[in-house]
Image (cartoon, rainbow, N blue to C red; front, side):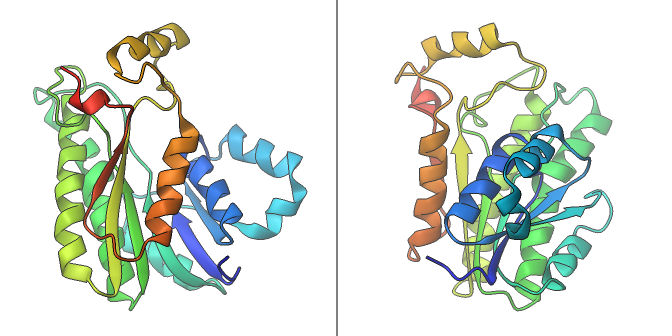
Length: 237
């Protein structure tokens, strides 16, 4: 177990996978620094129902379209040793290259901001690890979610480049989940139907996702890798 004085900064962690990562981090012995842009009911309910977690979580509301580096500075100002950064914040909305305003906005939050946060972590003298959350099927063309997928492809490339650049002080890896949680604009029937596209015929395996997160943290010789946790969806025709 890690000392509670060690902390992990997780962006976009007040709901969905980000919150699951934050709670897993606490289980692993870390203090969770939860970044959020807007307050979410999911985090509020967790804190209301588990009062013992309140001392293990620090929340930082912050708009990432401003200076992302300031978020890392805020985390460093806390009385913890920042040892990990998880770039979970993401925009998942439909849009393609006919809408360059949308493309620039998605590219910024999904790829450029994570790389700037990781660079600031490195520049502040950090030692530890960065885990980016990409997408298992980002390499498959999509007309409706083209901008989103392009941004995640770039994030995977940045993961590998920063892994080389920041070693040996900081390891940089990525987890590329498949169909874990229905998108906010998707209904349950659509999400259920995705099972037919996945070779393992299963969606929503959050445990495998979190086990992969634990594995990357606890295996110090892994660097520059993208681990796809998708039941084989990314290799399906």
